[in-house]
Image (cartoon, rainbow, N blue to C red; front, side, top):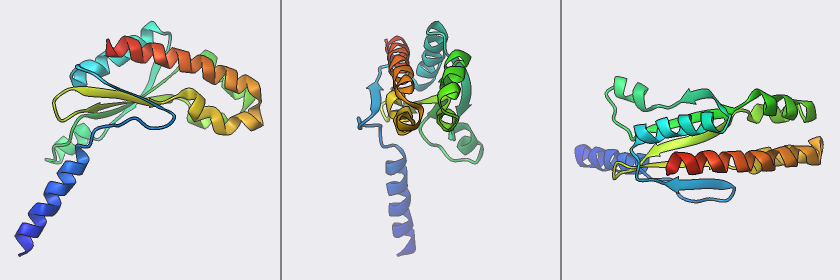
Length: 155
């Protein structure tokens, strides 16, 4: 009795772990024909081409593999540059907690990958009342930059 129940639970956990990203409010979600590793490389190249630096990278895939657990590819890449950092910081110390802006590369069940991110205007929206309209202007500019990175990376 316990073994069939355990098998069912493990199957459900594996199924949930492989759920693909879906569109949601304030996000950009783009499914691609690229592989997971190819999309990661494309994001890094697109960021550089759009004058943004790769500031952070994190994901559980490699560590899980080292533990003998296989999960779909999953990488968060933080992108920003010092010009935007200084400009945001001059408007709101609190808003800088949101930098770098993160993009999310996830592996799909068919071997392709999806690029997702919260739009910068969504990320910085909670700070606009405090910081003023200049922060909204910076966020809108960053929306354009991140849209260009996404377009370049997903081509």
